[in-house]
Image 1 (tube, helix red, strand yellow):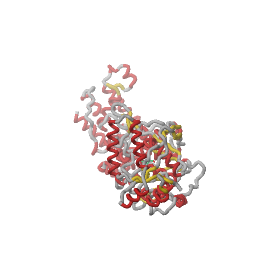
Image 2: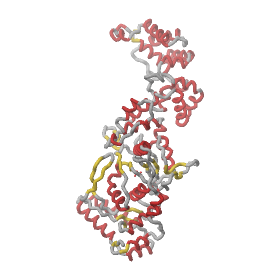
Image 3: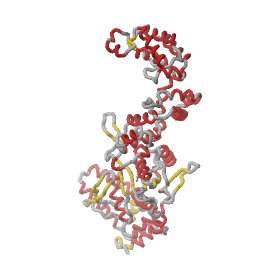
Image 4: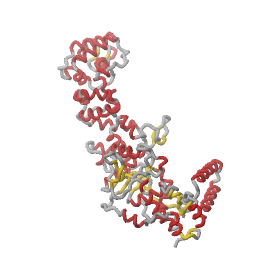
Length: 567
Ligand code: GLU
């Protein structure tokens, strides 16, 4: 029989939890050890439904997904909804949808059913913590029985007051030793109660929390190996932290130990902000008689601020909310691949050697992960994305740009949809072959890139090439209009451009031009530029020959005339 303050802890447990009839062993029986092959990893993503999926959340969940699925294990989703005050309506549903967009598929856990509501799939549920109150209370009751936890009747108001006082004290007080001593005394006072006091409180209906009876001393260290950060020593926990709140709902710490044990998680992959709480968790696993899982604490994602300093990617930063990527027009594959480049430094090399293979074929390796924070960088993401899009065929690009535009730029979407084969001929320019053009990083880039193919979006940028006389430009335009023949092949077409140039004093040969530039008004590149400006309205465009083929004689000539008239 365990005693606490001379109180029989069995009596105390029954007083506090009269309705909990189950025993831990009854629960254990419902969560058998998983029947998996040797080395299979069981991982989970355990978000709190308090908002959108953050880039920094997709990161560990990708690791969890890869490790489980690469090893023939199980990856599951647990919704950590123990803080009703912070919960956002619909966030859990949104989260599941967003994760699915980024290839994060769960084998079990909270899922969306056909009607879009959350339900459970799998034998280790319930997967929403709010539905597991009885389980946590059963284990809390057991810890009371064993003298490892105790009730604390301090009310929330009192706690609030206390923390206010503590904060003020903290500001004034730099004498850490005195502060630690004050905390120790406070803790001892809390631990010191009689059975009669407990009975009185309960009879008066006072709320209580359950606290752990910490057995650590801060000078002593626990040895621990993090799979990313390596060997470390952390001070033992000496804080009687709360296990169950006054509504019977657990804190993160307690729910983590109970759930990850019962759901048979082998690897806990989470943000490094949990590292300071690790001593609490190890103590809990020990108290509960559970084997602790392996841990991987992932460093925060960083970004460079305007001054070039590294800082944490915050919730408000562009690129933090995964739903933004859809709006910005990134294809999910690009984001997934970009994450792989951040996660494993050898990913890019592998990808170059295996350009056709999906990222899921890459042998992801924990040892190749960076121990300090990865740097988030849109330029890099854009490079990855341009590569991916350049390898898609024109039909796929047309379909994806159209779908995106219908959601985010409906007028443009409608234009694309009006004549899909016209759109496809545009996206086919420069595609295929060994060196496909890399123009598009996002679907939103499509309109600035090829909008000029639609008269509705065609405008001539206000760039008059200052180094040339208007007369010369007009002469080039007029000459071209005279001899343009859309049935020419590309070499005949280009020969004509050189010919016009030569006739008007522009060097046909670039080498010659570079040697004696003073002898010429310009080069054939300038001649092309005048035509490009007239026909596309821009200084940069896809291949001009193809552009003119697609636009057709009438529109090419109309645009050339319009520019000549405007000069
Ligand atoms: N609900 C916790 C969070 O969102 C989960 C951390 C964990 O993975 O254990 O930070």
